[in-house]
Length: 117
Length: 115
Image 1 (cartoon, rainbow over the protein chains, first blue to last red):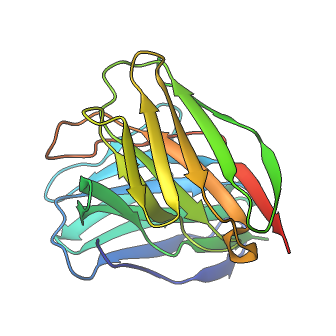
Image 2: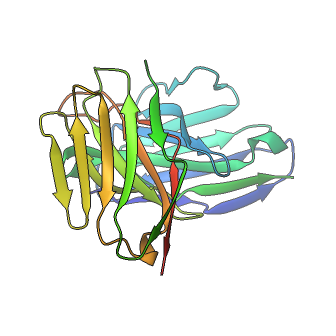
Image 3: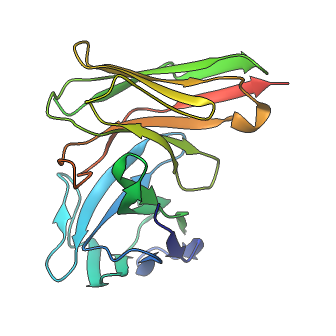
């Protein structure tokens, strides 16, 4: 599989400020990474596809100016939540494609809990 | 066409029993079907995955059964243990053999295994 880390694991910020979340692929070079959001007791919703060297692709309904994605290298993607509001409080998780017993698979990071006060 | 429907929403099983979770999809272009296990406050962990060229795949106590004509797939957990208590998500994507594409997740099933 792939080993994926996220930093920070949790963050509390004040309304109106910006927060940056890092996603690192520790053992695979990833030209593509994915960012998901998960609200309590709900499923994962894909927010955007992070593409190394080019612009991210956002899912319908996700504000690209609010959720800035930068895929700086083959091992690092960052998600910046700009002008955060309490409704942005959620669990943000990234995933990286890797190789498993079923061929190409996706592996998730440990997640980042964002709380906006 | 992009939906993946998962059932049941919650499941209680006695230790040693079999846990069965079902998923159905609509998009016949999907070609990758993984199952993830998630504990509270953690990221999902890949359990087992299948591609549509096989009807069943087994890894340890976990088995995926896949019915292409019915567009359904299920996860069976044999000899369920209290440590299996978690939320399970099915997912589907299309991307060819070299890619996984964007994952579309089911709604999730909360499994509780009673000692």
